[in-house]
Image 1 (cartoon, helix red, strand yellow):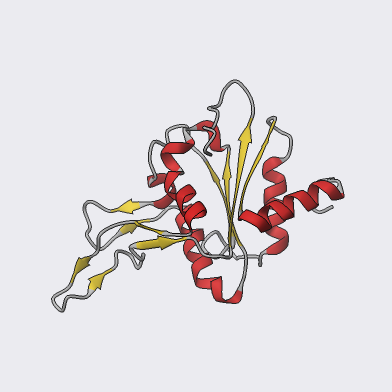
Image 2: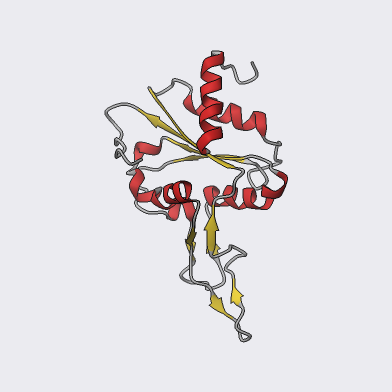
Length: 184
């Protein structure tokens, strides 16, 4: 009622069962049909309210038509400052989920309009992590005088997806967007 959504019990059960089985869900449909609102309402219902985007357990990231690599999702090492890693909202919510993994607080990454750009270009690393449960390297850390690794901006160079992270994507089905490959 708060979100202004009216959904059948069957739709809600399918939504919850889908997220419970895979932790990754793509909502597909016509523009304006409530895909993003459903994802936001569900995330708000299950997560504590953060004071701001830096403490929130969910984030909506609008996919840009210019996304040609993983930088918009996973950030990148600063080329001018060897101690800094440039983060993005998607990586930040993944990091917050990793910190809260022990207490089981769910965290949600909502990628809005995933097919505005070629999903294979910006989402391949995350899709691989979802499927394999493995890790990926964000950058190669430098070593200090004692041989200890120096993390950039306190960002661990190895990324894994925590078990309390759920990823929901929305896809508009119309003539202005890219279609996904069968693998996605």
